Amino acid sequence: MIERYSHPQMRGLWEPQAKTQRWLDVEIAVCEGLAHFGYIPQEDVEKIKADSKFELDRIAELEKETRHDVMAFVKNVQEHLGDEGRFVHFGITSYDVVDTALSLLLRDSLDLILEGVDGLMKVVGRLAVEHKDTLQIGRTHGIHAEPITFGYKLAVWYSELQRNVVRLQAARENIAYGKISGAVGTHANISPEVETWVCESLGLKAADVSTQILQRDRHAQVVTTIAILAGSLEKFATELRNLQRTEILEVQEFFAVGQRGSSAMPHKRNPWNSETVSGLARVIRGFVVPALENVTTWHERDLANSSVERVILPDTCVLMDWMLRKFTNILDTLNVYPENMKKNLEKMGGLVASEQVMLALIEKGLSRDDAYKVAQRNAAKAWEGEDFATAVAADPLVTANLTPEEVAKAFDIRYHLKHVDETFQKLGLLPQENTGGDQWRG
Image (tube, rainbow, N blue to C red):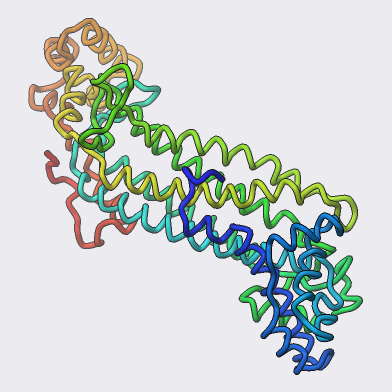
């Protein structure tokens, strides 16, 4: 992944030096496991632990000869050892090393991603509570629907992030497995007890059964789970982009002194950070199909997955980490404009109360169809510029069935928001004792 869209901590996990070190960690753990059960001398393992090292340049040079990256790595490690070097890679196959090391990388990457989601949730939760009572128009199909609050919108995001956490934890659980089972997984030259010992020493579980590789449904779960999270971030970012539109302008990304929005138009303040998050989500989604196709292998393995994973696994993790950090900053510095939210809410002269007018008439005995027609014909006047509340109050069928107080009640915004506190309590954003269901939210 290019440096522009990567953070040093996550990128550091996947850099060649760190990745190859994980290979060495596995090789040494295998030697320790073999010695623990008496298969090789302990004194040789101590020498291996003390003297094992590698050089990336030398591995690249050896790979020109071996045409095999793991064998080039093993040869390079053995160059720094004496006779004890014969026990490096003893009884195992390349993907015992590669797949177990890959599980370590993905496990640690998911830990960073979970930390990122936690940080984002703190900001979303804080803003949700802060704007729990900030009135805003809800929109469906891009058209004014009924009142909500900006905090309620953010509470929906918070709940979605909670579900993402559950999915990420499940993906972490299923990828935190290793295999030290040999060429086709049958433990022909290395025992299951060594496999279990090695995996546990690395903080992994041993796969119950494997072939030459760990099965790729595990890796597909990681990629698809991260892709769902990316989709959530794109959804949130797209909402901010829409709310920042000039004719809406209910929120705006922070704009620094000296910042330029356009090379040609000095007035421009574009939601470019949110647009970047939206765009990168498309990249991560593009990795889903290759990850799913990698689940299929010929017999006990083929090499079709390897080249794909060299690209999609590090890039998926690095991009997701960056996107979480970026979107957390977007929200943490977001400008929110409650007055514009209120102005937009009132733009259609109470048109958003049409359902309450209809329901009030139904309660008085009108059929649903007749009540709907009353509300709709007065709504049509509002679309032509007349004040909806005034039109409703003057309608003969309304005056014949509803008192002025009942008409006013139909336009009371408190009706729509009486359960907001209850929703926040269910999400853990408010303590249970904080009830305020029927209080006015101004």
